[in-house]
Amino acid sequence: MSVAATAQRASSWVAASSLAQRIGSIALLIAVWQVAADAINSRLLPSASSVFVVLEQECVHGPLLFNLGITLARVAAAFVAAMVVGTAIGIVMGRSRTIDALFDSWLVLLLNLPALVIIVLAYVWFGLTEAAAIGAVAVNKIPNTAVTLREGARALDRSYSDMAASFDVSRWRTLRHVIMPQLYPYVFAAARSGLALVWKIVLIVELLGRSNGVGFEIQLYFQQFDVTRILAYSISFMVVIQLIEWALFQPLERRASAWRR
Amino acid sequence: MGALSAAGAARFGVASVTPALIAEIRAKRYARARGAKSHLALAGLSLQVAPGEFVTLVGPSGCGKTTFLNIVAGLDRDFDGGIHLAPHPAGRPARVGYVFQEPRLLPWRTVHENIALVLPPDRAATVINDMLTAVGLSRAQDLYPRQLSVGMSRRVAIARAFAIEPDLLLMDEPFVSLDHDTVEELRDLLLKLWHARPTTVLFVTHDMREALVLADRLVLLSGAPGRVLADVPVSLARNRRHSGADIELLRDEILRRHRELIGAAAAAPPVE
Image (cartoon, rainbow over all chains, first blue to last red; front, side, top):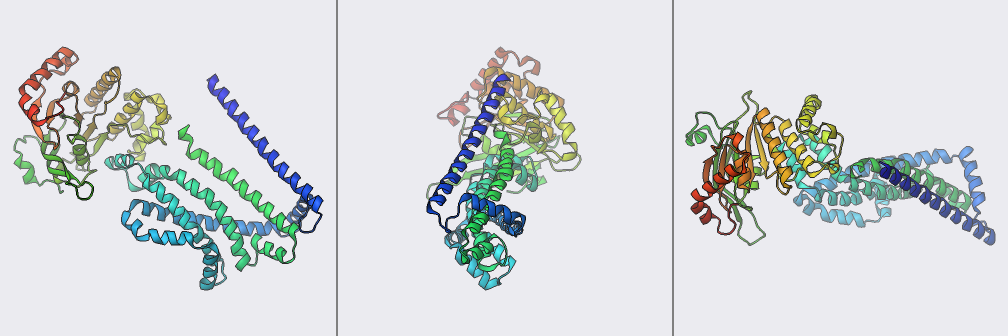
């Protein structure tokens, strides 16, 4: 008991010190930025302090929160679509050799298709619509999710499925209790890289064919060479994405892997 | 495959009671890599088991015992022959419980959840409580399998198989690679459970002493391809099987009586 308590205290101490390290590292980055900006003294590299002042103003008085919300909604929709479709494709391809042989080249092709091409084609074929925008982002992520989940499906332990089959466990229960828990590590890997990829592509989609959202705003400030506002928008968005990772993904992953400890 | 017809079943003759299991495997082959000849795992393995009977299959390793159990369990349908399980008296299809060589508990589910997986949700809680009490693990409900000792995991696997009230219980060397005391303990537990919850048992082992301690009847199998060499009822009263000496005598007698058969069939590894 006391050993466990000691271990727990030690691990929370480690967590606290790694948090302190992280904060220190970010503080260092901001300091370097501030010094560099002061030294160069140009409109093209605004100082950290001026960016944070603008960030606050835009949050309170400007449309930043509105645009952030719009962009996040697009990220969420594209992310969910890509995860669901990609996971389904990956599982099917991992389980069936025939289907895998049939569609593997399609996957490779799609993996190598530049995001920009997919976006442009989506807009050309389906118009400058919300569905085309979200669909294009999802299509960029689907092959990546499918490949990851295909690995997971190939690594499934047959002995557990046999156990379930011999006890006549229903298909749904087998999927939920036997198959999916084996795939969670792959789902989380795909989700993490997925979030990073999706939010970057969403900005491009907005820049090319939407009239609101963070990507649209950045394009606007690019035309005005307003680097301060570009940075303010980017920083707010990066913070939100990190928060999602930290407050949503990490606890979920901890829960799914609780049995390992 | 295809289940044996009633006529096919009758061909076996004996039947004053309907057997719980009729298995007739003419051949089971495993495909090998391209070009190589397929491997014949079972050839002419016919077996009948009466309801409530405890039958052990004894044979050298690699003789296809696990293959046979998987066929009976319905996991392997690619064979030449037929399996007939008598339906439950109430009319529903027979339920099969399987205790594998390894416990095969889902590591990401607790002991309770592992057993709940094979039960209808409405009855699960009561049944699980009863079963875990019966195997002496009522306090381990919320543990994950990796927190259990080897012996405890086997108990859970046995509890899971009995929980479904199986009409046929398959056991594939469930006590292999355990220390001597644990094996004794688990065997006693198995017999206790079986007396309290009678069912038909097909138990596979390569250890004839174990077979003699447990079974009503021994079926000796040849080395690969597996077929039945001899069918030996165990007449020794169950209350006398605790004595090693009696078991040893019986084992010697069987080995002597069937030496030719066993010797001829298993060129390499003799039945222990």
